[in-house]
Image 1 (spheres, helix red, strand yellow):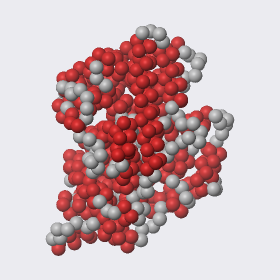
Image 2 (image 1 turned 135 degrees about the vertical axis):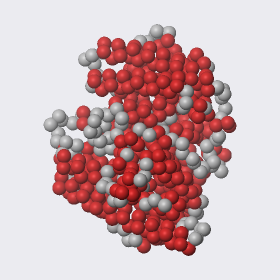
Image 3 (image 1 turned 60 degrees about the horizontal axis):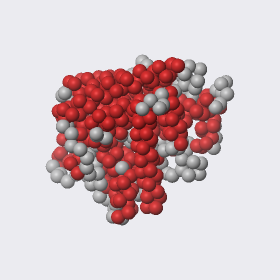
Image 4 (image 1 turned 120 degrees about the vertical axis):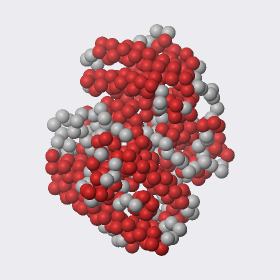
Length: 540
């Protein structure tokens, strides 16, 4: 459904600092995934994806913020699993690879070709990394020596990147997108040689000086990434102010590499550290940094801003089509809210049990899928925002944008990861209508949510076990159903919507992060929903 199609994965990159930070948001394995799993390429189950979503956004965020990378990954996994289920059990990786590669390139890729593509991609990215780092150091040195006050513009930076004549990536030569290639790699997850080559793509060997990197502490790494966020915001702001025809003259790769250059120059010139040394230090502290909330926030901000940058260089859908998408998303959201409310009322009145509730929830989810031939373009959150920025002078666009609720969702998602959007389309928290909640009330709601989740989950576990022999429950449906019923109970008790609770959480974020009751309740909610996810996985 359009309401659930959001952040697309960023293109793969292995630059020493900025783009590798983006890659880490994709490559970071779920803390609850089995040891040794590689979440970016291994066949992730629905359970793993939902646990990752819960870990990143929490109970309120996972329900209210439909704009997430995990949602899109889940949709892709569901499609992948359904295709496998409808195929004969003895199908091998070669046949599936053939179907995917023929779809993208018109020809089948052999295992040897895949190994060659991986090896060549690692080689090319190493060259690009080295060339950009050397150029950044040269320009930073020149700026310091000449004491230039004026920063290199995006257009001038792009010209310097073009002058490097960097090699093309092998995927481009084969006409493959990164997503298509990852789907091919999924079929070789048990092939140690292929997986070893693929690992080098996401985890390139550090090219920094080990001795210099030794002096960069984990706190310093976080400070550097915070600085990178500020510099990337400047790059994005400048790019968005360029004329539309100029922005659209850049390729996605050109945008990525130019942004990397500009941020690297600032890091080298103002912080007096070499980018490759920072990346070497990141590799050293990689495991510890995965659990560092501020580092995670910074890498996600960098990834989101880079996607915004690339999106701003691409053409927009027509206004009429954009309006149609907004209307559909708004209608889907209204239907979903009405359905959830009616389901809760029936469940509370005991006119339907948990098994019936699940069936109704699953049927509703399937009914929301667009009919054949009725699909509208899938727009990421960035594309939605950019379309609105382009057409916002139209009164009809502004009206339907507000009615659809898309703006509020984008604002909440941006705040989830701390993204500072340059667009003024998202209203400030103070401008949002609705009940104003105290931080103490938010804490009480979180604790009540724990109680309601426990009660609902126990009923779901019993119903799931009693239905043995029937088709197993789907993790994404079961989790959303349990959460919807529990949220409805909290809303009924306090007369407050989930959106209002989430916004209040943002408003009082500083104090709530230090509140032990709030933190404990949030962690408990995640644990409870993980129980549902794991149960569905075991049943299937």
